[in-house]
Amino acid sequence: MGGVVESVVRSRAVVAAAVVAPGLWPAWPLFVSGDPTVAADPGKYLLHHLGFTASVVLVVVLLLSPLRAVLPRWRPLQLAQRHRRFVGVSACAYAALHVVMHFIYEGGFGTFRTDWQKPFILVGLVAFAILLVLAATSVDAAVSALGARRWKWLHRLVYVAAALVCYHQISARKVFPEQVLWIFGPLVVLELVRIARAFGARRAAATRDIS
Amino acid sequence: MHIRIPRDWELPESAATPEAAAHAHRAGRRGFLRALGAGLAGATVGPLVRAATGGFPSAPHADYPAGDLKVTPEELATSYNNFYEFGTGKGDPVVAANRGWKTEPWTVHLAGEINNPGSWDVNDLIARLGGLEQRVYRHRCVEAWSMVIPWDGFPLARLVALAEPKAGAKFLRFVSFNDPSSAPGQREPVLDWPYVEGLRLDEATHELAFIATGMYGKPIPNQNGAPLRLVVPWKYGFKGIKSIVRIEFTSRQPRSSWQQMAPGEYGFYANVNPTVDHPRWSQASERIIGGGFFSGKQPTLMFNGYERQVASLYEGLDLRRNY
Image (cartoon, rainbow over all chains, first blue to last red; front, side, top):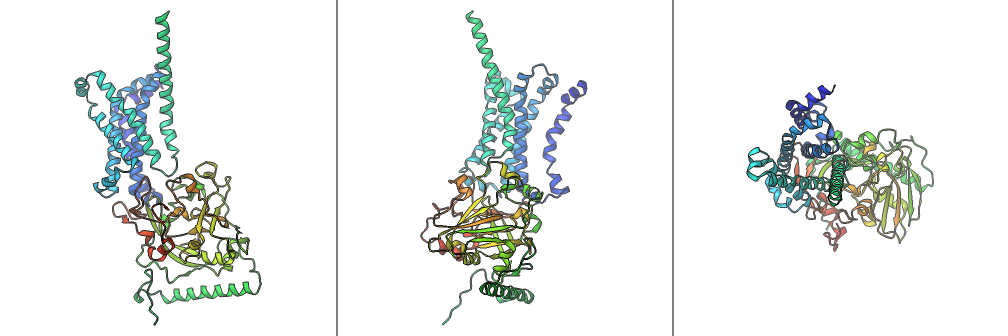
């Protein structure tokens, strides 16, 4: 059983399929089931679906590090680490599709004239710009060019991007969207656990030094 | 000399209402006169079928035909809904509002600064007010999408006349139902339930202000606000409170649910205005529901296209501050 799970987690094809599948999902309500709430405004549905998918994929890749801190010995989690770059770049790709869909939906780049005055759109665009920089520097050559230390600091900007995406999602709606809680909630909880542990470890180390 | 200025929703003779429809309209007027007569004679209107189906078929109103407006497909207007009592997703109400929520029989209470307070069964009320007429109105949501809907109902002014407002009555306060056991959204603190809306008395008696008990020639579906809802086509859709149980005539301006929730974003007036944006998005244009992927956007009109009819209500009012 464990072997099956491990080979699934190890497989690039399986992970690629899992990442691409949500992008293909809209074909179902649009062309097969004919959901009228989707047909009412198909452009908006696609726009929201792509943004939603981008944020979920982003959170999934961000969960890997804190999960490993909590479950350091769980083998499938160790194997999953190898897909981090692919999943992270996929999040950026979904964000790019979301941004492109925004301009298609609004009928061209002219919408940018007023977009930048809307905090929620501006914040979304800043988050996207961060993801673009991180995706562009995700190649091995960038790591060696920047040096591992600086590269790591640069890529910590992903947490800023996640916070901005969270704000972007909340402020796009008339009322607080519950989905934000179950998308970002687990990440926040796990990060808090990780921070608390790191803090505890530092204190333990400090105590050792004194004694 | 009598100079007749055609109002801009009126159509040229070439687009006159078909004869059958015109007959139906006159029949509706006769029904109104009959009901009025019955009321004057002091007779009570007899019990009707206990469902919010009274008054059908409705009589198309000659002043509010579809004309050049492209009516939204019924399937979309009855499945793409904002009715937060049944969930915040557009597709939630069509499911959740049809899981046993009872909208008949239904009683509406008239109260406050009026000479004629009381409780009315919806069907009795429809009969008392002269039956139903059909009007095709634009519908503009504050979320920047729009529909065109044929509503069946009666002018709100008739209900106001029935209530007989006293001199102190300046506003109407509408209250929706409150039943968390039937309405899952009311178990969440999304808004301060029950939903409340308000109008100035002169807005309520404007000829465009309408109470709908049907749409597309049929009783209004639960998800659209059965059995009766407010329709004020020059205002954003959220002013159109659904499933009304109480109408109070007050001396002070009521506070509406959205105003209470976010006073910086939703005002008492909520008039459609392409020059005053929502703080977070533009109101300059709107998406036509059912318009497809690329062709479904149009500029939003001042007062949603009813500027000539309603602008005089707001003379001297700073619309930028009184959004």
